[in-house]
Image 1 (cartoon, helix red, strand yellow):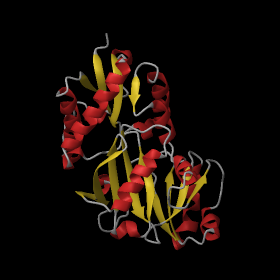
Image 2 (cartoon, one colour):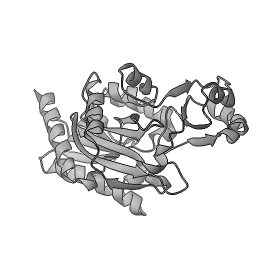
Image 3 (cartoon, one colour):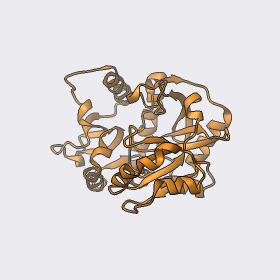
Image 4 (cartoon, one colour):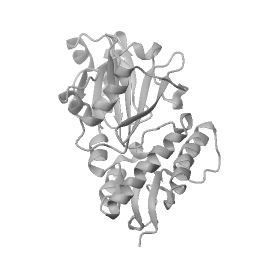
Amino acid sequence: MKEFDVVLLTDSRYVNPSKVDQYIENVLNEDGLVIDALKNLNIRVTKKDWNDSNFDWSTTKTAIFRSTWDYFDQFSNFKKWLHFVKDKCELINPYSQIDWNLDKHYLMDLQKWNLPIPESIFVPKKSNLKLDVISSEKNWNHIVIKPTVSGAARNTYQLKNEEIKKFQTKWIQLTNNEDFIIQEFQKNILTKGEIAVILFGGVYSHSILKKAKKGDFRVQDDFGGTVEKINPSLEIIELAEKTLKSLPTTPLYARVDFIFNNLNSPVISELELIEPELWFRFKPDSANKLALIIKDFLNNLNT
């Protein structure tokens, strides 16, 4: 018999931290809401660092990704672990979705499915392409570059026309190591921010508005960004639900992030199926929604 029904996956920073700041407190609180909701349904749950080599992953029925926010810093190790653990327990969301969602090349699939994304150029590593030539061909005088595998705005830069050519040496250094995306800078991010739409079982739950601090464009709270609850338009909600319906399998949880492009139309900046922050603290009963969905998932495993 399995010892646990669910392992809530985190990283080492959020397992018994010696120092707790506001950011870590929020992470612990959010994870705690999910754990409590699962326990209230008599689901046996524990919390583990995904990189815990002492844990036997075959002792749990499922593992749910919640705050594994160091995976992109040790990506090769994470990929190896992911391939290993998929045969030990069921993953939530499933392995196929996670593997697909790890790399932002998935945006190309969204585009094929007629879902709106910012126009994007994908640059393979070691391609030695000139950044100023690419931006000139697209007539982009203000761009954003970011790795296709990333989080917390790692190696993400905005560059104006006069900065692009000067950035070439750094650009070659970056693209020698990994694939990158180039996009035109969407100026509405500075004023309208980014809308995060949270869904459980493909159904809308709640939304958060993320805004960058003055003088920055990165909306993550790691960089001083702010978050607040928001009621988005029906168009945004329906587009988020349509996005999930386009997937081969409906994820148990998801977050679809929207920005408004330079034509003031909503576009999908990211689809998060791995370890998205879901801001349960802004709608505590949403943790109960997720717990009920997990309970149904567990029941289906047992049938």
